[in-house]
Structures are given as C-alpha cells and as structure tokens.
Length: 417
Image 1 (cartoon, rainbow, N blue to C red):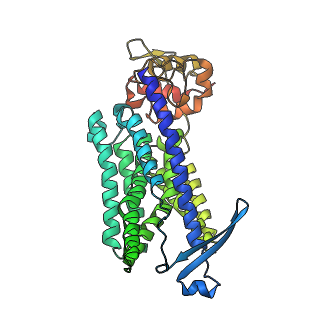
Image 2 (cartoon, rainbow, N blue to C red):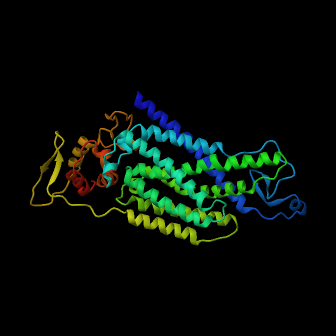
Image 3 (spheres, rainbow, N blue to C red):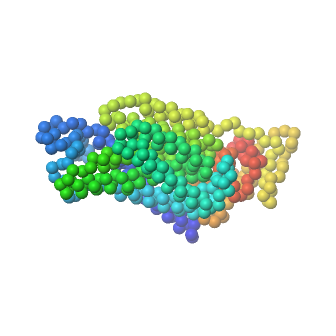
C-alpha cells in the first residue's frame, strides 16, 4: 500500500508540475513575444503620455490593444496583474517530485557507481542527497554572482551570456561525473530551473514592487530595477527550451547512458538556446534562419555522437547461477549465438525484481517507466532499450543485483529476437 500511495502522489505532483510549467513557460513566451513585437505608437497623444510601444492583436473573437510605458504612466491602477505564482508552483512541485523519486531512493537514482571519481562512486544515500541539494544551491549562487559581478549595471550582458554558457558546460560535466545519468540530466535542468524561479523571487518581483511603491508615492522609480528585471527575464527565456528537454530526457536513456553524456547534454542546451534566439528575433521583426539551422546541426551532432556502437561478440556464453555468479555454457572454440532464453534467465536473476508486473523490490508498486521484462514477449519488445542501458551500466540501478560483465556482454551480443 505504501508503494501505491507513493506512486499515486507521484502522479498528482507530476500533473501539477506539468500544468504549472505550461502556464509559466507559456506566459513567459507570450510576454517575450509581446515585448519584442511592440511598435512605436502612431497616436501623438500616446507618445505624450510616455507610451514606448504598442501592439494590436486579434484573438478569441475580440481585439486587444497592449501598450508599454517607458516612463511612469499618468495613473497607476490599484489592481495590477503580477506573474509569479506559476513560477513558484512549478519549482515547488518539481522539488516535491525530486524528493519523492530521488531523495527517497538515493542509492538507486543518485549514486553513480561507475563514476571515475572514487569519492562519488562510494557515496552512500544521505551523502548523495546532500550532494544533490548542494549542487542546486551552488548552481544558483554561482550564477547569481556571475550576474552581479560581471554585469552589475546590465552594461556587459554579452560577456555575462558567455560566462553563463561556460558555467552550464561545467555543470553538465560535473553532474554526469558525480551523479547517475538520469539524475545528472535532471539536476542540470534543475540548476537552470532553480535560477529561473530564483530570478523571479529574488530580483524580478522585488524590483517591480519597489517600482510600483515608488510610483504610488509620487517618486521616480530606480531604473536599475527595471533593467535588472529585464536582464533576468531574458536569461529565463533562453533557459526555457533546454530545461524542458532535460526534464524530458529521463524517458530516453540514449541521452544519459553514453560514457560522454555531458557532451550530448551540452549540445542540446546550446541547440535549445539558439532555437529560442530565432524566435526572440522573429518577434522583433528580424528573420535569422542561421540560428535554428545551427541548433538543428547541434542536435544532429548529438544524435551522431550518441549513436550506439557495434555489438560485442562473446566467447563463451554465460548465464547466472542461483548463487549470483556467472556460469559458462556453450563452447570455447566458437562464438555461439546468444538466445533470448539465455537473456531471459539473466533478466530473472538481475532485473525482474523491479521490472515485473508485480515487482518484489520494496518501494516499487509498478515497473519503472512501464518496462516489464518477466516474459519473453515483453523482453523482445524492449530489446534495444535493454541492450543500451545494460551496456552503459546504468542498469541495474547501482548494480544492486550484481550483474556481471560477462552477462552484459551476452546481452550486447544478443540479436534481440
């Protein structure tokens, strides 16, 4: 029952997280489009009132007239639309999911037993949890300090953008060397998502409140608040596409099981930022096809780089014994064909504790990601996926069932039929 309740809570949190994220990202994209699509007002009276730009739009059977003031409007209404709760709910629900799925099972989902760094490979559960939380916190601190030190007056944002890009390469490299593959992609996306929500919480909304308070008091707002809010909002819009992709990556093991997965992650991050740049410029009336073309090229490079290599051959064939060690079957003089029955035997000893219709591993109410491997039919349907995650040593998680290298070689040599 406990596993079922955790699974049901996972469903509800994920539902809330996706809805909040759609609302936040959608509103963010809309305001970027609006801001970039503003045109100088044609009405002289509007110009006298300080209207910087305006946009006419038609939607839902009606017409909309949006205006942006460069200076204080003559009269500020008491009721203003504020955009922040969507950001907070997205982050809080996402952190709730991370806690429910990863922090409650760190030995499964966080620890990278194959890390080249001994201290990371030997972390126990609570240490992995602390490392993950510290990773998120330090990611925000470093990003925030870069913003404050490199471009405190928003006059060196180009250099700042380069610094943030370099930071994300470092984050990708560190995450994949410290944490397991799927967690590494998720944590890198979470570093960006945390920066996005923290930008709203610590800078954008407080700055806007100071501006509103100053105007209501008849004072001139500090222009630095508007400039800083704009800077952080721009960063958020470029983070958007990479964050969405990294959050989706846990469904596609080829992204995070590659030995150099940080390279694939970096290529996707830059591809997302380049594609987003195209749309930002397009809203301003500038068509620059070079940006999406470059983004697609990076995605194609990631696809080429992450493509699986040729399968291994094995001599002799080996299957696990009941004691957990591998036993030899077949001849040593030839390379026998690995049969599905042999691979199914490996699955029965190493994988079906979790990947079964009714898992026996504590904490699992259903097979992770719906991958069931307790029958020959189900195994052959998942053949490519199984071979990939086993070859990369991502599965079994933390190698808790002690799958041997010989067994991995057998699965790699299996033709999947």
